Image (tube, rainbow, N blue to C red; front, side):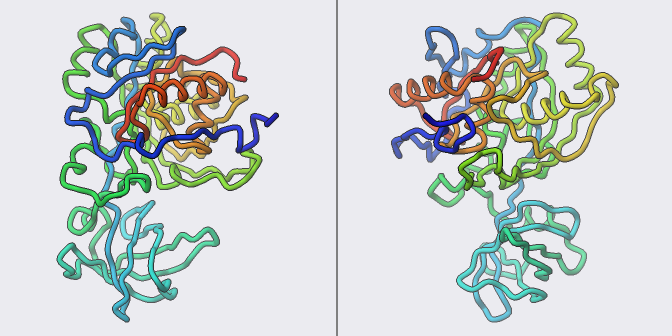
Length: 354
C-alpha cells in the first residue's frame, strides 16, 4: 500500500485522445463535473445553479505573454528561448538548441520572418538548466514579446500556436501581463457567464498570480515532500480583502477559480494579512498536498490535471485523494476533455483530508 507522500499515489491512466488539443467553439460549452453524491455531469453554463447568493467567486486576472522566442547564435545556430520570468531587461529563460550557447555570448532574437528584433547576452546558467539573459539596448521584454514572441502553449498540446490561441488561451478579463501559462479554469467563462453570476447575487473578485513554467515541472522524487516547489509572483488588493471579509460575514462561500487563486488565498491564510485588511504582494512557493490545513477556500473550480503532478496533489489535498481518483475515473469513463483546453470540475473542500 502506497503512502500519501509517495509519487505513485498520484497516477492514473489517461487515454491520449482525451487530451484536448483545441478549444471548443464556445468558451462556456464545456462540461462540468460536480463533486456531489452521486456525481453530477453537467455543463459549464449551469455553474450558477451550484452557487448561492453572497458566494464570492475569485478570478485570476493575469495575462499570458508571448514569451516563446526564436533566436540565433553568432555562429548562425538556431535557438528557442522560452522566457519564464522577466523584469525590465533581465530575464530567466530555458534555451533549446542542438548546441548550448556559451556564457557571456550574444544571441539575436528574431521575428517570424527571420528579421532581428533585438540582441541579448547570456549571463549565467543555473544547475537546473535555467539561463540568466539580459536584453541589450533600450528594448524591454514586454515590448519584445509583442513584437516578436509566440504564445507558449503547454507541452501536451502537440501543435504550434495559432491565431485562435491568442484569444482563447487568455481569460476574457486578462489584464495584468506576466504569466507564461494560462490560469485555465478561467478559460470557460464568457461575458454571459459573468452576467449570470451577478444576476444571481454571486459576487466576483480578482487577484493576480503570474503563472510560471514551473507549473509544468515534473515531480522527480519518490517522496513528494522532497519536491522543490516553484515560486510565482502575486498581488492581492485591499478591495478583495474587503470582499472576503464581507463573504464571511454574510455566510457566503469562497470559490477559487483555479489552483492559482487557491494557492494565493491559502498563502494569505497562513499569515495575518486578512486580519489587517491590507493588500499584499509577494512571491509564493506554497506546496499543497494531503495533510494541508485549508483556511480560506470552500470550493474550487478547476480543470483536470496531469498524473503525478503537483496540481493533482493539490486537488487531492482539497477534496481527498480517493475521492479525486473516483471523480477522475468517472470523467474518463464519460469521455471528458482533459487539461488546459479541457472540461471543468467543481470541488467542495472536505473537512479532513485523507
